[in-house]
Image (cartoon, rainbow, N blue to C red; front, top):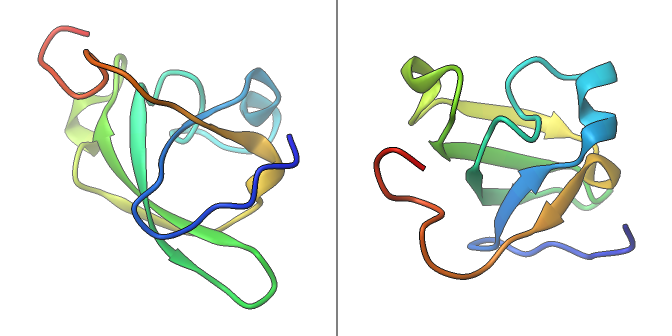
Length: 81
């Protein structure tokens, strides 16, 4: 969506992410950008997930940033969100 991400940004997957990714989709309530490559690809650590809670803490690398959007506000990391 034109966002340039930096380490520490909180993100979620856009609906279009379902076509290419399994866990880093809108079901990932929030993930944290932990690395940004020189080409703009991002690595994300899952902080909260609605359908695959066992993936919390997992890291996914080399992701295309066009499938993600920054999130902000409360209730993105808490239990039962």
